[in-house]
Length: 184
Ligand SMILES: [Fe+2]
Image 1 (cartoon, rainbow, N blue to C red):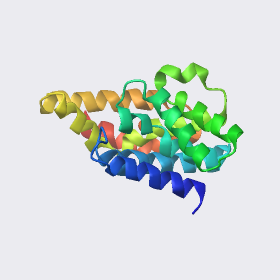
Image 2 (cartoon, helix red, strand yellow):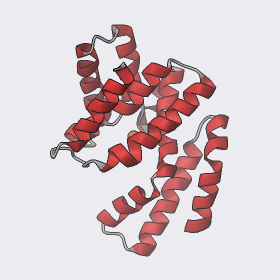
Image 3 (cartoon, rainbow, N blue to C red):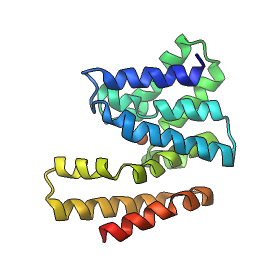
Image 4 (cartoon, rainbow, N blue to C red):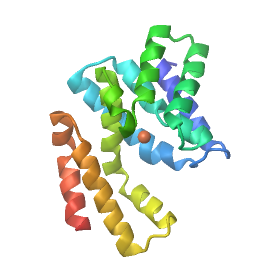
């Protein structure tokens, strides 16, 4: 089995564990679409595709295992341990770690490689494939239907503003416009 498949399997198994902080849903509705976007962007923009795919699968693993707080830091640590065990080259591990450490909006100024930028961008784009998940989070916070609709619209509008590459804008525009049409 290739290294990317190996990592994908590892992430799926962590999501299936009863201890997973967010259950199995993130695997289906966040990681799968996110990796799909990362792969498309890697094909268009370049970068080390293997590193990009590995980092995409692992970018939220800290959140699954320990919860959301500092999940970029806990995730980078889990990734390093797992990849070392699999004999992955150390310089590639360092780049995977940087992608995970800097995927959050708060870390955007630390990104200095195309791999880091693509992972962060794919994370943003994946929101447009998971509108039901954003609604679910809003209802869990106790919002009523009107408030939830507004929260989802605002979140997607913010995500749209964060899209960085022209290629991704082109890719996501139809979904963004459809969402705005339905949620306004
Ligand atoms: Fe994510």
